[in-house]
Image (cartoon, rainbow, N blue to C red; front, top):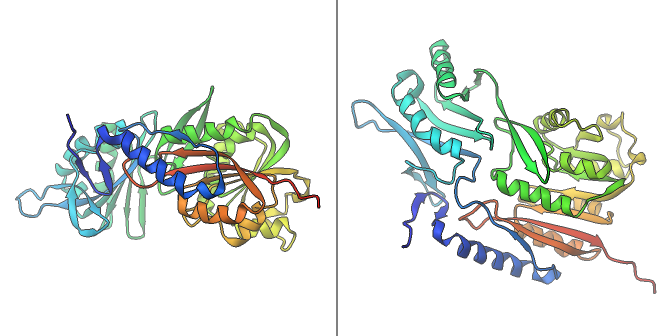
Length: 379
């Protein structure tokens, strides 16, 4: 029996067609990268439901009725002014989907909580922790804080209120995610408004895939660009002697350092540098006060890991990574990955290739390639 499509903007949510949709996606991306002669990709499917660990909804107010009830809505990209009511969100984590109706019912019972509320964001973990952010078109007062605290106690969640130039944290602004990676468990502090991988199950598969190809490089050092909160950095640090990891975001660097403490890791230096600044530092073109306590020349880099934004690697960063024997490239945009490989294929060949269905029922897919330097011609 064919399942009815559920109306979730930007999502073609038809669970009984998941394998077909994934197959079409894999075929398209494999063809896109075929010019670089990669091996047959390892394909990592997502859970078919309850895979999103974070979600955000606009709050729409029904001003026709006497009670001015509000409800969750989303918008299609091609119809940004037409709200689509979301009564059920099966792609959300179990914690999010269970909390959504109960939370909305409680908000609708309170004029204080729903007055000028226009957005609600969820951040959850595989262990069941949930942080919600309530965002308003008004300033928040003590009455709001009292009711927000009651929300925390009733639902065992964490609550933040935000308005123009105002941010009220009721108890804390983060959750602790624990990821089972092979036979180990890694803990990550994930903060409101900081980037986290949306699909925890696929995130684990990505980390395990990288680790499988770097089981023992304990005499070599790793450079990582765009390290975020240490998602890949911390598990990989067990396989390398030292790690130098860079990231431009101050909040991500702070979280990465905290996550080192959570996981008892002491062989990583996290530095706030852009990829372009990192290239200049390694070539000794510029001196950075942020590096004054680090002897760059003491590192013996063999491998670089990059996990860039959708725009991919710029020209200077491509020039930098081309100097490494091994490149681990995690990409959230196959099109810019293909553009970057057209340059990197002059010096490296693709030895490993994987597709991670981070975003089921959409055209988006996370890719991973491992490149090895080509042997020098001896003419």
